[in-house]
Image (cartoon, rainbow, N blue to C red):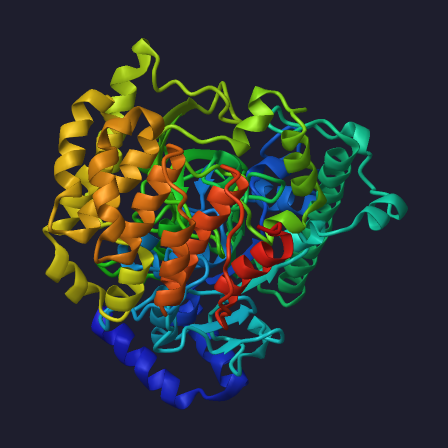
Length: 631
């Protein structure tokens, strides 16, 4: 039939056939004439998101995981993605990436949680916006946790009652996002009494304890309890799928099951290792649309995908053009070549502030190799984060370290880190053997280092500026900030990357950087000096001069470096910054140093009397005031 005639028929028929009966008559006539209706062209999409669990806790992806029969059934009628990643190991940053389809350091949504929510560029239409504009009913039940201002509403409804069934027109296609909290970190916030009286369904003696954790009754109980939570989550997945089937929507609906990031045993959530970002992903393919998928069902996808790809995939499935600003590309849908998806080998990830705890880390995984760049590796991973340390296993881990009862792998969490690390995550899944200094690995190291630098420059990465600058200048108008500072980004990255050189080669450039007119260059020069540690003693003179710098964070970093070398009592400098400054972010960065200097270097006697209404600053003050010994 002529295309113009089809369009005319559709338009006239929609005027004639109104109401549910009319719609059914119209669709029957269309099918009889070989016409595919608009509603039939648009699949439903449901995202089922479990909180805080990496792929390691599902037997479907890892032999040591829990059985999840309902999620397994989705994969048997769909695809299992063996290499899916969340980009960031914490909810607000990961979910901001998921919603924008943009790498978070590119837009400023990369701090958990936002001091000031980011205003997105006006021309960025996020994928739920586009779905709504193209006739979809969009619902979210119910977690948002975005680090940006929504602007145009993403959802027709977002609440604990939001459901795809609530749409007025049963023929309207829908996109529904359902978060499941059974596996959330808080499920492991039990005390000793609860551990004693509440047995787990999973036998603690059956769980596998990885080499990075001590094998103790507390850790075994915690792992067993988390296996139970994964199985409870899987039961909820089964109920959600049953609802779709009962309503006759199952075979018109793509179901994505995935974790919102990794976790949640100690050293995973909040950390950029595989346990923090490698997520389970299963996509069930509905019968009505399986001809649009270039892959056999009940099979594995080995190509690398990440959260920036999820939004473009939904748009591709819905037949909606993908905006140019998005960083990802679709992994399913009409026109998507699955051999090309299978060939994808690279993903990037990032970690910055988590609640009150600071450290800047970037990573790239390509094939079996993972490169991690620690920009402030002198901060140990085990630095206090109040929320993390509510978990008994965290508390015991630190206590055993303080007692000297951990082996090298287990105690690494509480030690400083090199500026860069390289791991073969297939032979070393818990990232315990750093290959960066091995002669035979230098070509791989150089390649991944170059890819990391190229990616950071291309964004450009806003974390090259301290968070107070990002919040104060970039959060409201990212594009204006980048245009104003475009020439600075490569200078800051080059200064930070002096940490990758032998000290003898880096020292002259660091001396010049500390004399720079740009305060952010001076800031990174001092961070790099701290990364070198005691070997950088030749730079004490210029660092001492910066104790009177006009920029408070430069003074802070100078005091931190000199204290690391044991040459300065940093308390007067940092306490003065805390008293003189009224910016919460400056307070937060300074208090991060206080906790590091006190807990790691043993510098006590702090006199911090100020109060704060900002929740993240208050967390640090609560910790310091509750545990700070008398001077």
